[in-house]
Structures are given as C-alpha cells and as structure tokens.
Image (cartoon, rainbow, N blue to C red; front, side):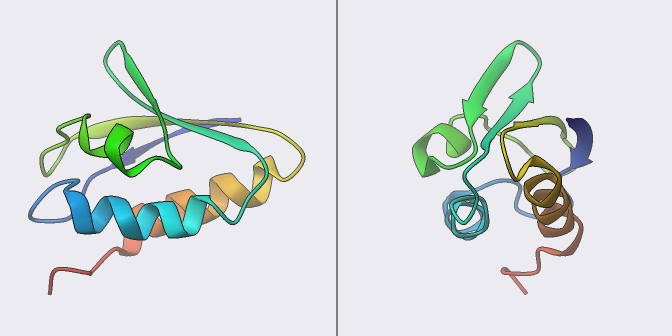
Length: 87
C-alpha cells in the first residue's frame, strides 16, 4: 500500500517529530518505509527519519506492507496531517 504525505510541521521532520512518528509506527507489525527522491528509510528508526532532511512542505512517499498495513498506513498518514508537537 502506498500514499504520499507532506511535512506540514513548520520545523520539518526533526528529532522530536521523528520520535513522535516512531512512537506511532512502532505499534504496527508492518514494514513502513518513507521515501524522499531515491532515498528510502525505515519509519521505525529515529536516525533514519532525521537523515531524510525533510523540510516543511517536503512530499514523502509512504509504503507499507504486512499484516496490519491498512491500519499502519492510516495511522502514519493521520500523524503527518495532524502533528502539532512544536506549537
């Protein structure tokens, strides 16, 4: 399953954002991968996520595979659409 999300956070995908995202993605058994251009990272790894250097407005592809893929994709998409950790 795939979708595209946009980093809406005014500070981009930084360490605190990544930590909050990992808390969401780690709840699922499915593999969750975020891609920016040709770079793909594990959405359950804080360091991998920060290495994307995703600034505000960056579009990321989300690819999910596994037993709970539909729920994992929905939770990941919802997180990107609602993250307000910096306000």
